Length: 221
Image: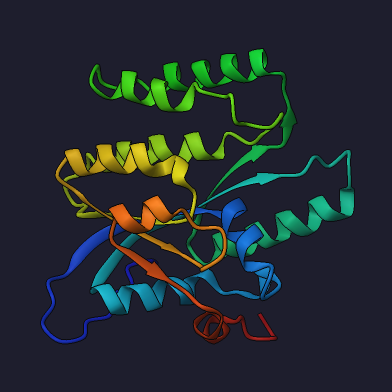
């Protein structure tokens, strides 16, 4: 059962949900370590200690390869996700797809329509996430899913903070909206691939190589 609580001193306890952009995490960590060798629970424990945070949920968002493209790669990936779930982490997946800009926009419009946003949030989300001019044809839908889930979770009465593990600037509009609900935000990332704007606008934690080396999985895990 999750609920990490590591108090140091008399800091006020905050309750939070962790949102992990696994694709962003993978591409930035792989320059130092094999990403699957990092125990993400240990990473979050370190954050919890530093910020006196009680973690209500850990959510892992990731795109998965198609089994038809590479069955072995697919099975290894699914086994890794299964291990995360055994640790109590909630896994949310999207399949990699190749879409034209027109198809991509329609797909995102359908996503937003299904999420039943309020009249204030909807136009802001649409403005941010229907702009596909800078996106490649490989669309995962992960960033949109995380952003909308953060907005939904920020309405929880038992939640004080949304913690995002990602360095992607696409989440800035979602963070701004979470703050408008009266909740706090925190972002954690590694020195590679982070947004300067994220660092300048929001409270953050940066994990360097030496810190991540303390979060490696045990060989028998």
